[in-house]
Image 1 (cartoon, helix red, strand yellow):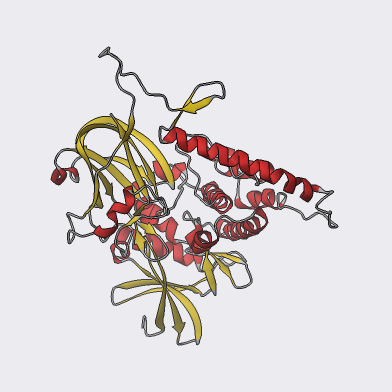
Image 2 (cartoon, helix red, strand yellow):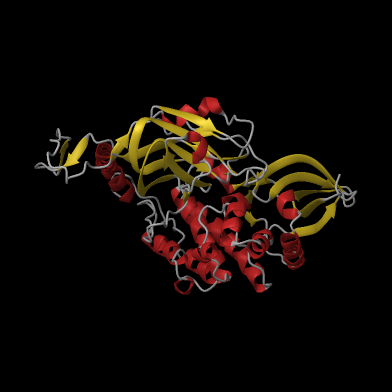
Length: 463
């Protein structure tokens, strides 16, 4: 019981900022949702003061796309927020269960989110943490945005790197990462990233500076709208949430009147083209996999051919090309805890099967109860020159570093190159020699059944 009024009944979920409970307001006899804030941030005066200001404003905001904030308070050192309870589920388990959404389903959801953001912006409050976990669809299919005020309080209280680790937003806006001022266009960017993930099934990967393409069945006009929202320069985005919503409404696919017989109309043409399209797609995938695993190479009359045996150059000036280095063993690494981190699942990170994964233990918060980190220790069997890696994970967004050396005990304290986990990523590092590679995780993300880091596949490149 909190504040002698809110009876906590069932945990609904966890995030980097706290736990959400279904509760009963015993004074008004109604079901509400109570967010119990994580003590590590709730006890920080910087965050507490900012949250008080944001909550006062958020409580006055209402709109069709928002979960209304009803109350806030503190009881015996426990800080909490109370919002209306929405019978439904967030977009994260929907994406995990059903995969990407068709445009005619995704667009109305995002338009409703933008309507809620427009109401918040009109009241002078930013969200700054728009992501699938914070959008709930109710029993009627209507979307509601939650956690209004929390993201802005975190952003105002902490440096950009700390705020990113706490919020664990899959694709933060560039200005959030480098400490530039944020405004309504920041929420436009985050909502564009949300729509991209709904349409593709994965958050957008923007590290290269090139906007990624959506699946071929997404209308090009819709893709153009998403790309405009995701531009790095805020001046090139939609000026506000309302303008983005108007653009999306014009892209909602329309059903053509009257049935068209499949053998004569467009549906028949699509069906006739489906088989060769699938053959082409399968061929492209097979070629890509062959190139990645060194079974194929470019060349020959068809442009690609089986990998030819290489002649080792006799000249010492010609270095060998980077290749995938075999990992002989993977073990969980928890030097700052009890020494165990789901050890039995560690080999799943190198078993060649992306459907299996090493999973860390469940943590209350994104910073793993203030641990410096946890990780996977990868044994290469002998000293190698490591130049890069490839990682796959079903739950991107966590932060990790990489360290290479011959002494496992000192790797966790050695300087590491920092990365944000993507669903599928590869990256290079400065060539470093060592027998061991430490994948050092410094934050976790909400996976639907707890805050964890997961590695489905990890490969090491080098010489």
